Image 1 (cartoon, rainbow, N blue to C red):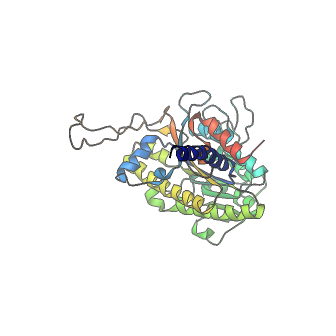
Image 2: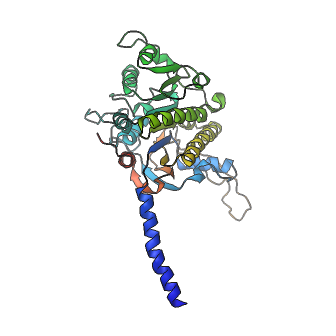
Image 3: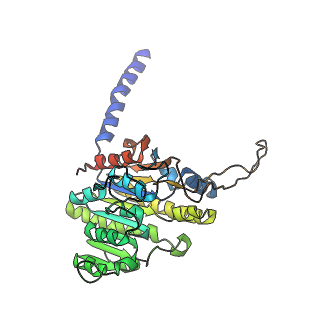
Length: 367
């Protein structure tokens, strides 16, 4: 009996490491990066509580991590500096997009992926020129330089662009005519509603569905989950043609707006919308091996806490409050949730720049 047990234990010593090595070697072809703008751990907890602890998209995660969000010049970051840190793997000052503090141009993971022949895309509920999406393609000294950012958007040559910002794209481009016309000349299929893109299944898509921002969650329906489905459909087709995987960034942009307003109801609506979008990405990963889903935040907004209403914990129920410490951002770490192929390869407590660099490494991206 003892000898049989010994053989079993020896067998396990050989089998388990081999399985680990096999997982480590599995190729990550596609990365779906979802950013909940302003989403802290308390925002995720708010959703779980509202769902009475029934499983949410966040509970599906195979692994988790934490990231520190400080910028180069401030312990409390803004979206442009945080977006740049994740997109490029380098710190910059608040309000700066895609440049180092000294003004050096920083190359984003999306630009590297594009240059490597990988299909690329952005899907947001803000305007496409907003700070977080801009960090993946623009290089400007201040996030408010919308005209310069729009020029960089035209130069990006990403396969799929879905969001708002029609107002800025109607302006005259340096090439003559509007930016919308300039995109069409570059081979983009340009539409102004998501239903108009229904028959578009490959190639280049520019869907500008609002003058600036999309409506709030309750007013836009299932736009973000459906836009994510459309982007994944097109990018998958393009990836098949290119024989390479894709990279896409999808942002729950207005979690941040709701948290700035300290509006609990709006935050919850945006979190429901973002969770539905995460489920779309995770379902795609289930059907397509080699896909890694990364759900992160750029920073926390609102200083949200969910304390008990009563301090007597002998009670059957103490009640809960949602309390905001600020109408701005905070310096707290934010969560990262990982799902699919390679989920075990990002873990621990890290700087936001390390998250960006790790994604580049996993996709084999180089300048």
